[in-house]
Image 1 (tube, rainbow, N blue to C red):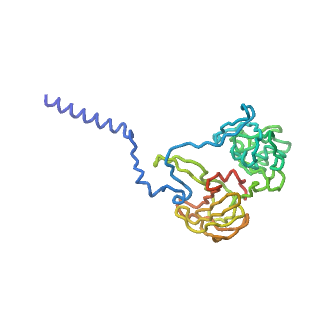
Image 2 (cartoon, helix red, strand yellow):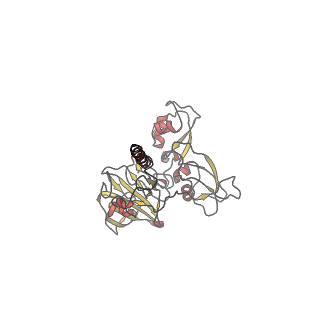
Image 3 (cartoon, rainbow, N blue to C red):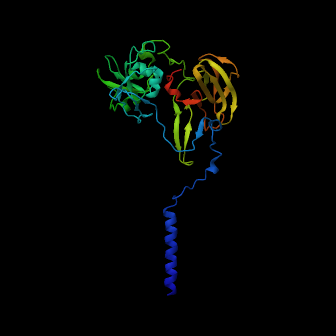
Length: 333
């Protein structure tokens, strides 16, 4: 009898231990207080990253498309699934619209929107005018006589492998009449003009602050696997290993110094409520109150502040609200 009681006790203890081991995560086991060394509550402390108090998803503005009752509004997703060819749609210009706003609302760069609508400019935009828009930042290019993948890639400053991957091409051979989708193109040569609306800057006048070689972290929300919270990245991290830094647009320097997680940072105020921030610098070549010109040398990129390696954290804000800078300028300086 005694042996049976002992056996029952052993089995009960084993069952209890097994239940605990089998389901250890019924409740949150992460104490966020232990992670204050990694993330604070504001972007200045984190170098452009901000811990969000709630878990949420973001959506773009709603815009009207042909076929919707009353012109009306239709919600478009902010991002297109990776390596998916976007849809082509028609947008009817409404009263008060600008090309920049239409481009931003549909996730397209201004110059890319113009490349999809030859001849359209801010000067001839009219209410009721029909524009071609895509649910992604790119264009459809029809292969002409003499074209090759190499020439097309060079024309738009993209990689051949990227063209092949998104268009599901098995070889480098293309035929006259083929239609290829070109993602995130530089359309400077394609537009064939050096006007302010079509060269290496948007109509707002911004240019790439460094020689572009790629993005290591885009702008937007990320879910942190440890903090169990969304971390909002206010800018883009551009590949930059101690290289010259240039002003993206003319303006007044409102800050030049060290700012917590940003490290060495330059902030420039521009017309229209716009502001650019250049962070994690190695050297600062301007002072507060100084006026700089577009493309003027202002410093050198580095790895100061809260970073794991050298890069440029670049922000574009309007009236304090962070925007995606990649939608306002091409990838070439």
